[in-house]
Image (cartoon, rainbow, N blue to C red; front, side, top):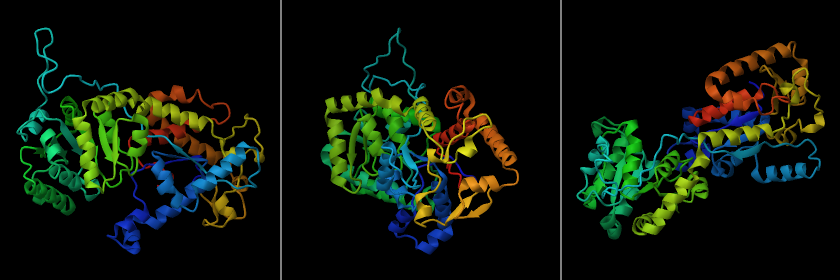
Length: 458
């Protein structure tokens, strides 16, 4: 295992504690199914070796990483403050947590100002294209398809909390009179052929629709293609509707950003990533997913107050570029360029200026407090007992230069295929002091764009 300079993470992972809280499995069953203790051990070692950890949301830091022995948010801030003041930390170290949300492409998205009532008229000079087939597939469910559409796009999973949304809609008569509800819950041919959990959830939703007699007010299409999803967002925006994510906890919430790019205001859970998204976009309302009345009130407020709806739409469109792929890369590279490695010998080339050991601590806080496995890993994976530092381990290898070159060449090969045209930008940053590091880190960045697990633990 290598001593990585940086650890990039994906927020979709559920923590051990969250699994235990759900109460469906014991500690032993969780460990048997997910090999969770092995993964936690690997992540502790990665924390010990990383200079910075890049996460997608603040919630990951406050509620997930703080559960590890290798990180404490309060102590990390105190150590960083001491370093800024030039006060010695006596060899204590803790990786810094950086929030950089995933990047998305928006250049192909063109928000439409017309609505379903025909603000954009078909004329000889302005021949409108025919409506996408998915529109008619959804509209056939509604007795009055011109009402604003409340759109939820999620798989039928208990965590997505769709049943509470249907209850909130069904029990709020003013909301039912003002809006329709569209539930896009994946594809299905026969409910009996679905997995047990999905089938059970879908049946519960259908029973609620029947209980509240929501026929003509709720759409739940059986099929849609991936290429139909942008058109579904467009349809909801044209009806002056709202996108909702009522999940009990949402690790990030890419669908909220997609919806905002098409001009849809949002109502979203206050647990997890949507808090960060709302702080940037300011394009909707956050709710307690357990509070049915709060969900109904937020939806009713947005669909009934046209000025609020227009303001949320404009805020989303104005700020959406902050979640773009170029913005993500700029943030990522600037963080890496300003970062100082704890193991300068791994980064230094033969002609690079010498970096003294005093530039950054070489021992971790967890080593001092004996909270970890008290192991250090050399560059090619050989273990050394906790008494020796990484630098000593590197110096003791028979042929460290060849091993380093082999790994760097492998990383460069992978990164060149992953980042393509971004190579020119990355070589403009930090090429003198840390040769070869940018390619590896942009490779991690590219993985996070596609929600891949990038930790060196796996």
